[in-house]
Image 1 (cartoon, rainbow, N blue to C red):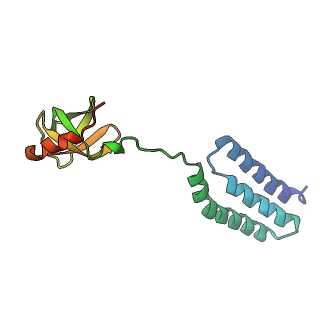
Image 2: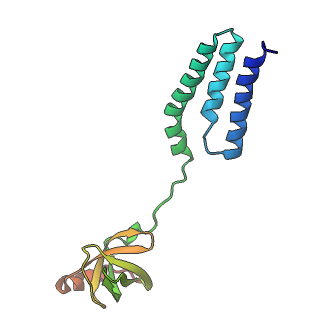
Image 3: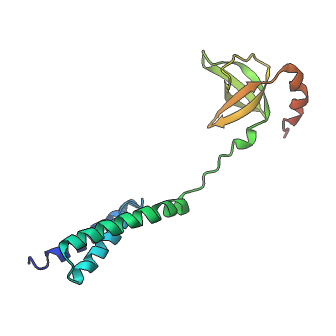
Amino acid sequence: MELYMPYLIWGGLFVLTVVLEIVSQQLISVWFAAGSFAAFLVLCFHGSIALQVTVFIAVSVVLLLLTRPIVRKLLSYHIKDTNTQEIGRIATVIQPIDTLKGTGRVRLDGVDWIAVSKEGLSIPENASVRIDAVEGTKLFVSLIPESASEPAASTERSY
């Protein structure tokens, strides 16, 4: 039985890591499965225990470092931020923007958005603001001086 113990250890580790990978599907243990398989092959060719452990660690770490970034990039779902087209557009303040009170809403193309002043300034109702950034459902805006708001208002889309 002692003769077969190393085979059982490396084989069992291989099976365990493969099962964990199948269950989790998160690319957590696939590299350790490859490392345990490589150590199992070293054992089959009568390599020492130190060599088996070294091969296991080396193969696991090298594969992890070389392939994980590539695999994650290939498997990542390309999430596209759909609100970036709003940047640079002009909106109208429908609720005064006050950073201290945490209030502020703007209307853009008939849709109401939460708004925050980029500079931290209070912006009155009916003022025109330029959208500088979008974070989720929150617009970061800056006040447009009245002289500049008239020509800029023509850039607003109408549907």
